Length: 248
Length: 248
DNA sequence: GCTTGCGCTTGACGCAGCGTCAACGCCTAG
DNA sequence: CTAGGCGTTGACGCTGCGTCAAGCGCAAGC
Image 1 (cartoon, chains in turn purple, red, green, blue):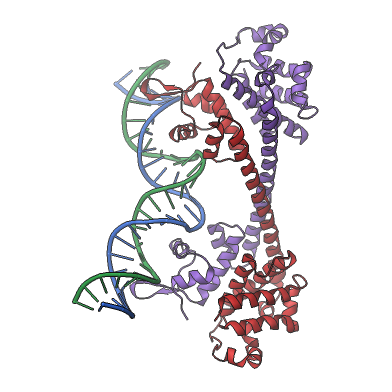
Image 2 (cartoon, rainbow over the protein chains, first blue to last red):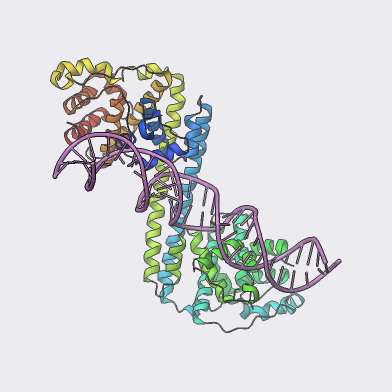
């Protein structure tokens, strides 16, 4: 008994295009070809196809499927499946965490709509505190002059939102006890530094000083800690690590 | 203050290729071009880029990002984010379920390796019970003769494995109280019918009879019920639905 | 004999989000 | 004058097929 490509497709609830694709990449070759190059499939191919579809349903890639199916003993199969399972779990967890972050974003968006955006921004423009930084670290701040510029309302709002986003990310790391020198934290600090550079370009000492002000100054500390206790201190420590490693 | 493409790339920890891509698709156009067509970015573009990267980190597609960012009020933004969150949750759950299925597959693979595969297959070849089916539904089974053929050991193992997979899927549906006429169940039945066709081609009555035998015969019932109580009965009912709708 | 239609063939583009050459221009330092 | 560093615009590649497009062989109906 032989089947044509369309018959196999109907039986297996896939498309003929898929079968041709599997033929093209060598994953499932027909038993032979009839007149006109017509692909003919035998029982053996059907069995193979069923295994392929099972593994595909499990989420494996076609190359992984090929290696599993053509693997004689079960060793490689188990290893591939095990790795795949680990990937699935990690990816599932990642997406769940992302969903949580998206929810937070939605929440703050809803709340933030009522806030006056400039008020939100109030007490958060590092440039407004530059003078204080300068008082404490005069040499460091001396040549890092504030960039002047006229901010549009939209730019302003964008920058403010960005500040909130960063604070929330730091709060997440702090709550999760992620070390301050973790790559993810330091990546966020790099973004924070870039963000600060929109107003001002601190060097290592000044940036470290800004971090310390986040803890010392009531307004700053509240800004961070309202997303989670200890966030301001966490940010301060992370900034110190970043400054030591990346700034002049 | 302006930045070149490479400077922006370094600041934002992305590649210049990405920035050019965003320019090409209109997601982030430079503020202007200098001599030689050199892209120049201003502060406004940096702010926009930061928002883009935030949303990208949340897993949104570039087109969704564009619609969110260019959306003036917050209505559309919330809707897009809400849909995205729902998608994330669904996908996360799906992957987690898949991981469970993969684990089951690994388990059965480990156990199955010790079993003699023919013994596994024993008591599960529908053709072996064809005579009994024929006794009860003689007219129906009369013209559905068993396909002869020499089975290789590998074909045999593959078919056996396929049978186990199907049983497990049915057990999952039964445990989840999925109706027997649910599309997923009927899809599995279609695969089961196809699988049976590898040995034998029953018509509607014979297929229904085979299902009833799954309940009546101790060996069959155990085969299914060991994956979960009531699975055999569930399969029987599902097969009856399938036979009525799809078989001659 | 001719058309129509079905089922099959190969070939090619498109999708997301860039990575990765390739080939070339411009500017500066040695 | 040349090397090197930064910039430019193409164009192909990756996954897993969907979706035309153009054409062949065979059967039925005119």
